[in-house]
Image 1: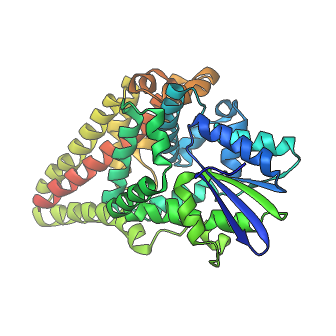
Image 2: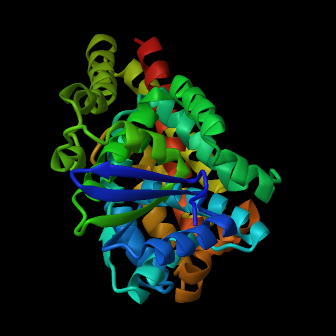
Image 3: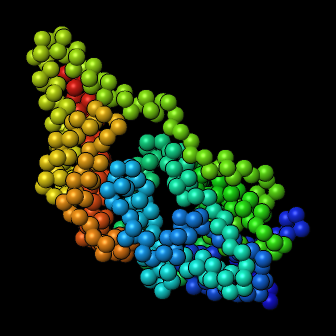
Length: 386
């Protein structure tokens, strides 16, 4: 039986490589994955998963194992919120179409087991992908991505199954990717281009003479174009250290403020220093407290975030968001049930506020943003008083 246009067949070093391009919430993709693997009966089945995402896909109890205090202490709140936003967007599509996100990957895993084919987790570690993507962004583009994630999290746009299948067509996909590259090329490189190279390299090295690979349709063209390319997967997995300029930037604002305090005290015999302290403390406390309130923080959390912000803004190693998140987690005490429901609840803004787990994350994020805004306003005010 001939393959559909969603299936690309390649030859590499005497190997037969069959790439199935899928839409991640499409029943047609699920059926096609099963049919191709059954027809070809390959030696290996490669899936667009790393170990973390594989375990999350097959272990539905994963959320109950998550320690929110550790998430906050290890400064992984933003990463987790981004993951929830993307998962929520896919879940909404899946609920509408009756297909669980990742169902085509599960189908590939199950079919590989049935025919006794070797499973290859072909994608790069998700933490490396997210951190390389985040590291590549400027401060302005980080704000843009955060805004896009919030839109994805709360969007009520109706998307039909026909529209999803349309996105799999190569012409439409190329046009979409081109627009994406022009709008935010810093994201496209680590999020798509690097993974195209990583995926095709993993697939080329999969055991056996015949290999079926199941990947998102967005990756197919890039993988094909890199079929003969030399790829260093270890290099693509390295998380680049923050440049010294970025590390220095974290200390510039505190040093400016402390220097202003010193000169204000020395030149005006303490009279201006008092005004400077008020200029620093008030915007820090007020803006951090207001955004903690917007997040629905408890009164004690709001108070402690307001008190902490003027201090933590002078110390880049700890943030008001960490203080707010830890206090809110201690007060709300998210339960196992909250953790299990967080993926479902995160599909709506009301659900985020209702779920104790996601509420704690929201408090941590908005407290951080409020404290950062307060620090910039306060620093400007302090300098103007010199």
